[in-house]
Image 1: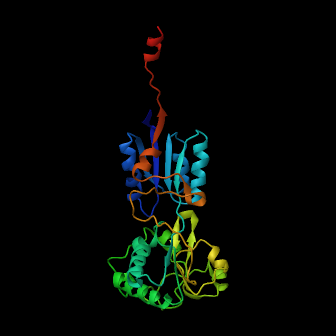
Image 2: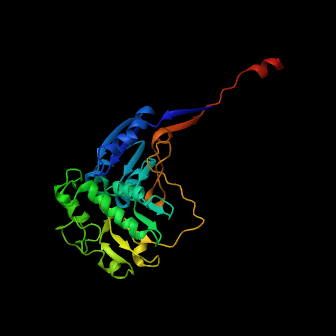
Image 3: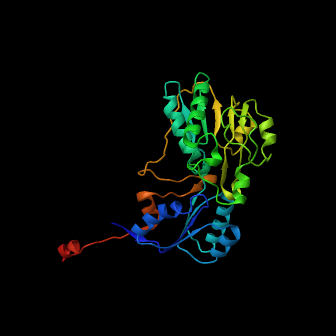
Length: 299
């Protein structure tokens, strides 16, 4: 038989963009597993490094790859297992027979929720040439419907937690008003200018990313070429216009509590949520029970 024993004391480190929910989500299966825990919000690399001098039986970290490497190095000293949730790519594929209005509304909600600082948010949408303008128009309509024409006055749009993160999220000035015309008067940066200069598409909004702080800054491009260097960078919300895709099999794992949450490589390792979290925080101990019936017969 298999007995699931609690691992012991675990450390849960949540990111700045979802400080409460990213503690509660792993905390629920941890409590169900009978785990003792220490839950903290990541305050930065120096603070995390100091905390990792203590020994834990399991560490779950949600954030960015550079900090994850520090956590793995510290955990290796005690052979402590880790679960790392580091984000990933979440494309949206929209075919011609899809409901463009509903698709655009869902994408606008998912991408701009919490200032776009969500690792599960749609990164880019692939639409056909026949549907691209309808999709762009619908996306623009619903963004304006959700947040109004002046986002600074919107009570529904989230605000970045501090000036340091704000300056990195607002990465470049909006040079066109075709979609995001209501986003104006932000700070100007040019980190992605070299990549954006090489694209064959129409740049609607420049953006970028900062792995160190797990930031998501959405650029928007129309008519981008798949061979562009820009397509190989860690960017978010590229509106790309491809020809119709054939023989595509895609599984979208979004807001389904019965599915595990986790990635591989730079997206992390391990998984949790629901029963998968319970399994992560317990040890499957093999227990063999054997009676004495056979020996009794031999006597």
